Length: 100
Image (cartoon, rainbow, N blue to C red; front, top):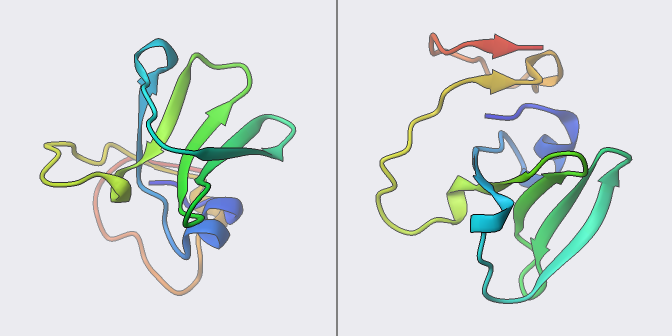
């Protein structure tokens, strides 16, 4: 769960994601990539504008939005990141690790 300012503003709240090695990622449909910061780019659906991907320039993985997946995933949240930037309108109420 990412609580950074960019993810909060783009998703409207917390951004839940998982990641996949780039060589195993297969995207069907049009994705528009834009430079979100000097260290990463974000991918949005070119049709509806949904925030779908986050890709660090120096990593071999791409994060994808769990909210975009259909059906049960069997995935579980492992940690919270950028909690120092979380919104003041919610609390983190689980016992998962938190990183500033």
